[in-house]
Image 1 (cartoon, helix red, strand yellow):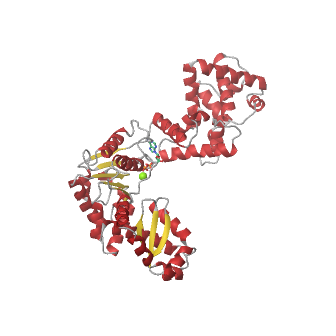
Image 2: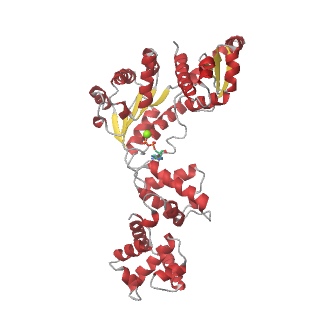
Image 3: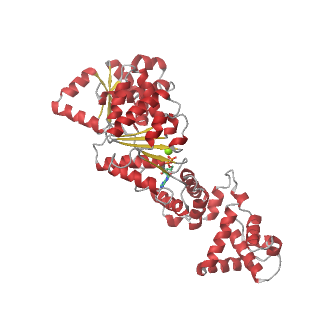
Length: 458
Ligand code: ADP
Ligand code: MG
C-alpha cells in the first residue's frame, strides 16, 4: 500500500468511527447501510476532501449528512476542508480529464500529509528566560538543522511550562525553511492508538514504514507510553531507525527519563544519547513578558491594563503558564463584561478573582491591609486607627488608606469611617500625598510595592 493510501485510510478510519458513534446525527441503520462503502479518495491542496462511495444512492444519502461529515473531518484533520462526494463512475471521469491533472493530484497529496502542527505555537511567540533558555536553544537548533545536533532532544518539566509549545515551534519553523520536510507531531497516547489499530488492521509494517519516512518526529508526553510493552518495542525500532538515519526526534515528558516508570531501560539509555533539558517555572520577568505577549496576541494594548495587575498575575500564577494565561483571560473577560471603564485596574482584577477558591476579598480585606502595613512598620492596627500623630504612624496610616482605596471598592467616606472615624477629606489628602510620593521617591515605591505584595500573597 502506498504511503498516501495508508495515510488516507487511517484518517478515514478515525473520521468514520466518530461518525458511527454519533448516533444522534446519523441513525445506526443509516450508517451501516450507506456509510460503510465510503473512503477518502483524495485530499487536494485547496482543501477539498473527495469521498468515494459505492453507488449513486450512497452518494445521495451521504450528501444529506454533508454538514456532520465536514465537521467531523475537520476535527480530525485540524483544518478547514470542504467535502465532496463522488461515486466511482464520476471519479473515473474526473481522473480521465487529463493525465497532467492526475500527477498534480498526487503531488498535492504528498504536500498534504498531516503533521498535526498547530500554527500558533512558534519560536517568535515563545518568551525565553533563565528557566527555559537551554531547552529553547536546543529546540531551535533542532529546527534549524534537524538531526544534526541533539538527537534525540528530550525536554522535560511540569505541566504548563511550554513543552508542547516548543515541539510545535520546531515543526513550524523547520517546515517554513523546507516545506518538503516530513514532520509529525504526535502525543504518545495517539501513537499507542495508532500502533494498536495497526495490529488490528494487520498493517503494522506499513505504519512503521510511515514513521521511518519522517524527517522530524515530535512526540509529546512520552510518560504515557509506560507499561505499553508492544508499543514500546515498535517505538524502539522507529527510534533507532530515525536516529541512525540522522532524522530528528524530539521527545517531551513531565519527568526526566530515569524517573519515568515502566519504560524500557534500553529506551531510557537511548534518550540520554542526545540532550535532555528541563523547563522550569518562569521567573517574574519572563511571566511578565509572557503576559504582554499574550495581550498583544489578543490585540489588546498592554497600556490598557494597569502595571500592577500584570505584576500581580506574574507574581501569583507563574508556576504554570497555562494558569497564568487563564488568570489573564479571566481578568480580561471580567473587565469586558463587568468593567465600567476601558482600563483594567487592580480593582477589577480583584473582583475577577472574587469567586475563585482563594477568595480575593478574603485575601484583600480592610484588616489584611491594615495588619500588613502595621507589621511592616512594627506597629499595631490600634495605632493605625488612633489619633496619634507620630510621623511613622501617620505614614503607615496614609499608606493603609491609599491601599484600601486602591484595592477595595470603598468610598472615601467609608474609608474614613473605618479608620477611627476620620473625615473623607483626610482620606483624599492621604491618597493624593501617597500617589505623589510614589511618583517621585523610588525607595518609597519599592517599600509600598513590597507591602502590597505581602497583602496579595496572604
Ligand atoms: P506543557 O506542554 O509544558 O504542559 P504548553 O506548551 O502546553 O505546556 O504551554 C501551556 C501554555 O503556556 C501554552 O499556551 C503556551 O503557549 C504557553 N507558554 C508556556 N511557556 C511559554 C513561553 N515561554 N512563552 C510564551 N508562551 C508560553
Ligand atoms: Mg504539553
